[in-house]
Image (cartoon, rainbow, N blue to C red):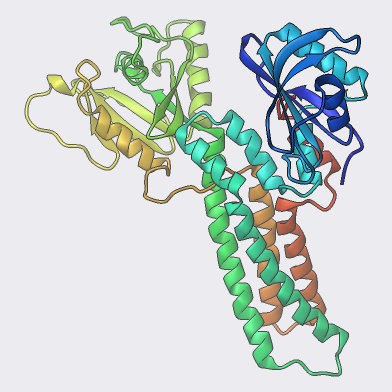
Length: 438
């Protein structure tokens, strides 16, 4: 499904470097490249060449490689120029190609073309952007799993099963004179129950994938002088926040992102919360702290183990961290939600971080196999709801037309994950997130 546009754009980041790659895709790619570089080598083989302008002057010495349709990233003919990493050279190559009929690509247009040419489905297209933007090891692994088609395979299996059930149900509607065997209806019911269970399992996995894609946020809260800023500095391994014996030192939010166990977690040091703030600036800091708590996946309530203060603010999911444990006399031990540590010595921080990863759902022994987006979650919820409707209709002995309509809706909802029926607006939104050369 060629778009009849020959598009071109840098495939490497702007700036100076050893090599820059310029990608061109479309029907005119080969002829433009041969006009600029001479005859190309056979597909998938590099050729050293002089890249020349229309007046015959040499722009650069480089390499050129041709990928013949349909065996290319986009499914159309693709050419890549490998030249020296000089922005001026890159711009000259782009200008020469544009003068010969190419157009500068829009953000994500190469991957959008691959989707339209059915080289990849929409989940795989999204995972390309996720892989480029991944900021942790777990996110990279999960994005690669999506790109390889693991999530798509599970959705396709569900769709295949629903299609078979639809065929049986709709055939029974089309031929009412042939009374449908009750055993067949019971078999369909069992199959739909299995599809619903699989949909719910995927939904749970998708919810974790959404968290992994978006990253995690942990609020560090507590009374003044408990060691919140010291804990942030310990986690970041640098002095990001000012520490002082004077209460109310932290007035604004201080944030740092830390890679823990392969997951990226943003820790937010908040203003000390107390009932008698010293002026409007501290009051504003406390208000911002409360807003951070609402938005965070988890809160760490930091207390001075030698001087625990009353703290009745609702935190939701939280751990209590008892700092300055090195000053305590006698023994102490952690519990499920309470951890002793010392920000001055680092004692106990590993235990806290291990529990933190498990609580966030990233360390329970179950691997999140793909990154996910909110639209995947919405489609799976809709698909599950329509499967439940179909099962209810079968169980209550309602007319098969209702069952067929529910199955059709489930099919459409789950199918939207891979290839939406009316996709123009959605595609525009998704591919606008990409960089120009992808």
